[in-house]
Image (cartoon, rainbow, N blue to C red; front, side):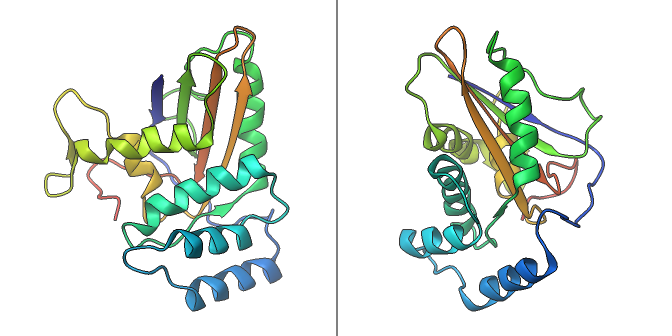
Length: 198
């Protein structure tokens, strides 16, 4: 298993044309009326995620639920599943199918989305594995110093819990060599140098 995260420098727009104004209002109302408990109750997180993942397939729902569990533990608002981000992730995952190379979809600093990538040897890896691996980097993140432990990665975790991130879309592909490649994209992105995630 190996992970990769994208750290970028420019903000993307907060407007999401894939979610109509009526649905966006409903989501905002839902977030205000269904606060996460402290500590979060998995069923509450699941029900909120389900409402924020319209017409999702089970795999998409699993990606969203796992992200929102991590965010709920920090008292952060849940992410909304975004079809455009999923389609972008799907396009990149399909390009990685031939080689399963752990590569980002953009050159460093040249894209307006956050991105976490995951590779697992063999076919048995799933959305929970990827998000759990990224979230486990929390142990390497020092909030007071706003830095990762020396020689360790924590940017996947900080992207998941970035307070201003609102939307996520992910994809998984079984590569030609029978390994698994997964990617998630985030808007607005996180991991801005010198800023804390929450």
